[in-house]
Length: 239
Ligand code: SAH
Image (cartoon, rainbow, N blue to C red; front, side, top):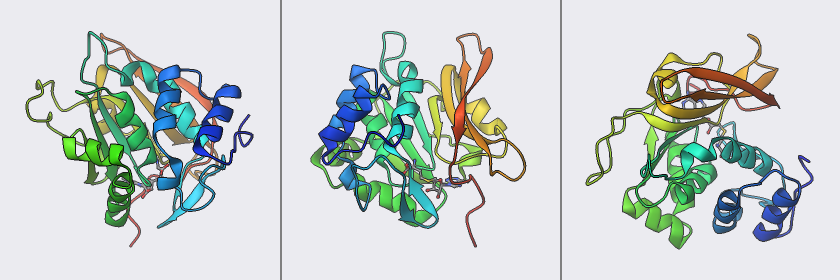
């Protein structure tokens, strides 16, 4: 299925992700249709492949973004219990997935893209400015791009006017492979909450697997190995 989803327009790419079962949720499909990948991927935006965005970073392949969203969607969309989901996108890079998240969290949700490189923090934000929808989301304050070490997570207060429900996150997405499941990220994951994180299988980091880490309402953690992947690594910023 992977690599088979390329199209020549955004709509075709999304249709192929749908037809191949990479997107199965209609809310996810609607979000993918709203966000034009051409604003985020510099060349051949509708190809189902990762692409360089500079600074040794890549925008992940569309099928990986689809997989990430499908795996966290129940914690991403607003519900009666949680009308204002909080989402942290570590290693936001191009900003594409950050924008997709923002389309899904509802009018009261908060999405923060976190980068350790300032030019990439800026890139995510400026890519999002390319569409009116993106601009409005940024202006509303419900999407922010922050600078910091994603291994430490982030303490971000509620948007003004929104009920203070602490600084934790209902969803944490990590866009780079981590050596370990960092304790700060685990602490900041709310109960209930869900993390999508690629982890190195060994010290070399050549083999990696992506995991879904879930916390239930009483804080009980479960871990599921989803598949083998190849991501940029979650590191110190290059000197
Ligand atoms: N989700 C992004 C992926 C970008 S590649 C996209 O699809 O566009 C991974 C990103 O992780 C890079 O932008 C890199 O700068 C960032 N990164 C690596 N280590 C990091 C760290 N310790 N803290 C925050 N970001 C980090």
